[in-house]
Length: 375
Length: 78
Image 1 (tube, each protein chain N blue to C red):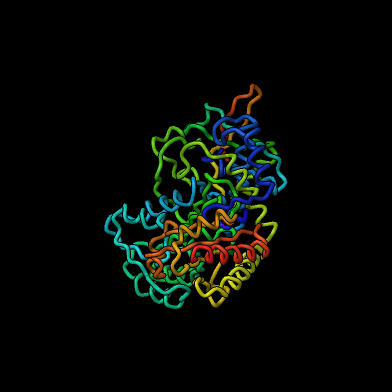
Image 2: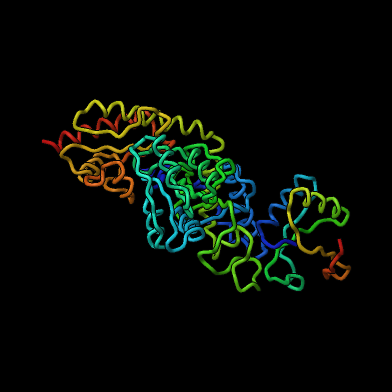
């Protein structure tokens, strides 16, 4: 199988991740509970994971790295802290439901900055116009549908200027693009552990630029006589037992990324994507949503095929041995902005483990499937 | 003593990098007023240097205790 659904989850992981999970299952208990060796091993692993993430994302201290169940949980934490009913919140036109739904659930007044795909200057201008008077802003660093790398640096600068706290959704960007949390000056940055960071499912991270209101309350392994969640991070946001096998795997994934080099990973994913796109663009019936400037797009690309349903094409590709995702990708907002809302797209998302040959083969199989479906 | 495990761990790393051998322990219940506290155990002659290192790294710490001959923790004024 050629796995090209890393935007959903990275199926291929380094072997060190597998071994770390296995070892944790066999030797680690729960951190912050007992004082015995198995608990301390777990505590050490959790701390080293925080430290590694803090270094990767340039976070001043490891306490600002909070573990969550996934990026959705992390985004809900951030939005819960910043947004109340009726608050104006500015978002880009490429946000995922994990941003939009919590905002609507909290009855926020959402102002969507809708700009054409890859039109970064327009997006910056749109944010500049919308930000005054906003309670918060949320922006994805990379679209999960189109791989569009947004001008998050300029948007963060605008947010600092207008004193609007920014939540960065780094779900697609984390592990694939260099990101500097301190430089961005964001209030929060959310990401899953199981996509570009190459960790297991059931892990997520929230980088905190401020101390937030807890979403969950329960045991934190500290300050136990306090009837409320502790005041300090990370304990304040980490109620309940950690997913230690998950965090052990996440640590191994992050260590792999640091050893490989994030710029090298970004360049590789871009190269595989470029090869795939060039081959596919030769087919007139297929519309490929590719940026002219390579630096505007990460390792994710969507296509539409004239007269062919995206889900039927995705299914055909699956049978042909290419794993992709069709439909709206839990991001109807992104599709509405890009004009693909009615038909959806087929999305191909690459990982550090996809090869140029796989990209080329996937393009040829796509053309083959399209030809079959159109006859 | 530290208010959270993570702070205790960060302090441990700072002190170890500074050449101080420490052991991360759960604090005895008798001194764990807030409940479920962590501490770093070290040799008495490293105390002053360790406190300076923690201050330099903006790492807040709680009370300091010395173990008496009969193994009970006694608060030390620093």
